[in-house]
Amino acid sequence: MQLNILKKKGEIYKAEIIESIPEGEDVSLYFHGDWHDLCRGPHLSSTGKIGKYFKLTKVSGAYWRGDSNNEMLQRVYGTSWSSQKELDDYLNRIEEAEKRDHRKIGKEMDLFHFREESPGSVFWHQKGWSLFQKLISYMRMKQETAGYQEINTPEILDRSLWEKSGHWEKFGANMYTSTTPDEKVFAIKPMNCPGCVQVFNQGLKSYRDLPLKMSEFGKVHRYEPSGALHGLLRVRAFTQDDAHIFCTEEQITEECLTVTNLILEIYKDLGFEEVILKYSDRPELRVGDDQVWDKSEAALLEAIKATKLEYSINKGEGAFYGPKIEFVLRDAIGRDWQCGTLQVDLNLPGRLGASFVDSDGNKKVPVMLHRALFGSLERFIGILIENYSGKLPFWLCPIQTIVIPISSDFDDYAKQVNSQLKKVGLSSEVDLKNHNLNYKIREHSLTKVPMLLICGKKEVDSNTVTIRRLDSKKQETMDLKKFLIKYSALNKAPSI
Image (cartoon, rainbow, N blue to C red; front, side):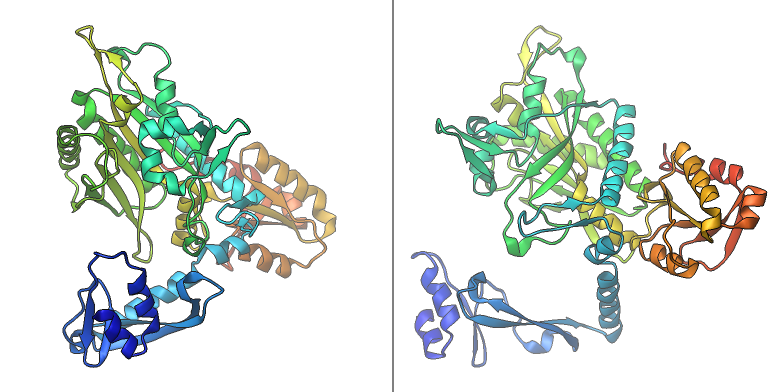
C-alpha cells in the first residue's frame, strides 16, 4: 500500500528504498497534508510546533545513495529555535567553529595533510609530529608515575585470535585483512586488547602481581566509509593511548577511581576543566552470560558513585564485552567531545586463557579494565587545535620561539641565541631569510608561534632579546639568561 502511494505521488526514491527493505520488516509513513515521508519517526504532529526562529544554512549536492553513477540530488540544511537569541547564539557558535576548523589551522601551521592514496590516514609534517610526540612524552611521564608498564604488540594478528576474542564477529566487516600464499587470514588490529592479553599470559601470575597495568601506544586500523572521514576527527588509521589493567574483582572499584582521577588530572593539564561522565550498560549484541554482566555493571556503577561526580546513563551503549564510562570534554565554545573511556571486562580474559594464582592456590580469571585517556591521539590533537584555535599552551607548541635578526649583521648573535634556547629544551628556529622584519612577523604569527625574539645592535650589546608575543604589538626586552631560566621552567605540563 505504501509503495503504491509513493509511486502515484512520483516519490521514486522513497519507493526504491521500500523495495530494498527485506520482506517482513515494518515500513512506516508519516503524513503532513499532501506530503508523505518514509521515516522510522516519530514526526511532530504539526509544523506549528517547530521553533518560529529559523534559518536555512546551506545547500549542497549529493549523489543518490552516495554513488557517483546515480543522479545528483540537492540537500537543503536549516536550523530552528524557540527564540531569536538561541538562534543567534547557535549561528555564532557555528561561525566560531568554522574559524577554528583544525583542517584550516593545521594547514596554516604546517602540521599535517591527507592524500587520496591513503584516505583516512595522516601525513604528519615535522611540526605536527613534534606536537604528537610531546603528547606521548607527557603521557609516558604520567603513566610511569601511576605505575604502568609500557608494552608494544604486533599490528597484524591471525584471524583465529580475533575469533576467540569475539572481535571478528563484532568488527570483522570493518577490519583490514590479508590472505597469505598459504591461505592463512591475518587482520590488522582494530584495537590492542587481544595482543595485551598475550603479554599478560607469558609466565605464571600471582594475586601479588595484581593490579598489573600495561600501557601501549598502539596503531590501529578501522574501515570507515569515505563519507564519514573528517580530518583528524574521523580517520581510518590512528594511535590509541591504550592501557589494560588486570586486577581482582575486589580491586575493581579502587582501580576505576584511580583511573578516573588520572583522566581528570590530565584533562585539567590540557585546559579542560568541565568533564561529563556517561555510563553505558550491556548492548544487545554482546559476549558473556548475564551473571558476569551483572557483576561488571555493579562494580563500575559503584566506582562512578564513589567519584561523587554527576553522570548520565546510556542504556545499551556498552562495549560488546563489558560496561563502560565515557569521559566527555566541553571545549572553549561549548561543544562536547567524547574522548576517554573506562571499561570493565569479565569476559575477554577468560576467552583468551588469562589466569592468575589466587591466595588459596587456585587459578582464577582476572578482571580486565580497558582504559584510554585521549582515545585517539589524532582526534585529540584535532580537538586541541580547535579548542585553542591553534594557540596551544606554551609547553605543547611545536615551535615555541623563532629568533629573528633585524639584518644579516646580527645573524651570528641570532644563531647563538637559538643554540642556547635549544640547549635548555625549548623548540626554536632562527629565521635568516632575506625578508623584512614586518613580513617575518606576519608569517610567523599566521603559524601561531607564541614568541618571536628580535635581535639587533641593542640586544647584541646588552646580551638580551626583545620579545614579541603572539597577538600583541607590545614588546619587552629581557636579559637572555633570565629568559632561558624563566621559559625553560614553563616548558612542562602544570602537574609535572
